[in-house]
Image (cartoon, rainbow, N blue to C red; front, side, top):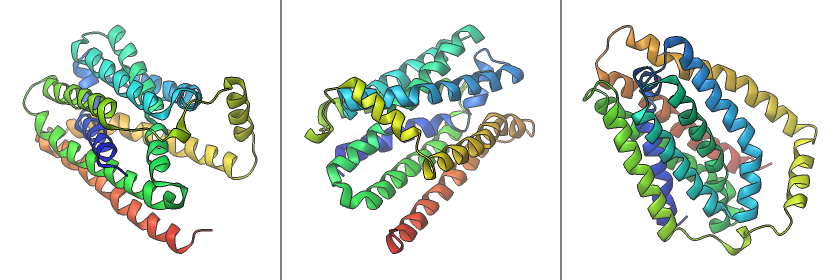
Length: 267
């Protein structure tokens, strides 16, 4: 994988990590309540689900690079809205934009990396991406915990996040190149039909969907309320970053372990 793409992936994950320890707290401090935080996180998750399919079609039609650039723009817009929000009415478009950004990012950067490396290096490329993302998230979590102690509305976290997403956009636009095979698909209708046919497959596809939904509900509950529960103990701000850091560190070790398992047992 080329250095420019590696750096873009790392910076994007760093931006996400900076907000990870304080996202629920930031929502509370910018117009949400303990009850509406779950609604906002739910709106974000629903947006990701609804936009996942059309964002994939967009990436196939217009290119993975354009999808990734659009993701960076949407994420920048989302956190910009959050920074200036003072009410629930402004927070809903912020989380919808965040969900759209996540959907357009999902798959596009992975496809760019795989196109560069070739399908023969699929396992290694997937592992490298996972490690880059987890390292960025872990470093961002530590930095985010420290930044949250500077102000009372998480402004420094948000400003750092915006600067990083702007850097991701500029870096990707200037230096990331897309493989010719990832060019636009000439027939939108055919692309949609192919994708729908894939979703209708039995076996592994349906099992994966059920597994994703099951784990998704648990993760949403955890991500929504762990910061609120921990804040009741009035810990130092760096503690929030340390908790997130440990979680992302576990993902790094899990990715390396999974890579070894898949390398030894490719079937």
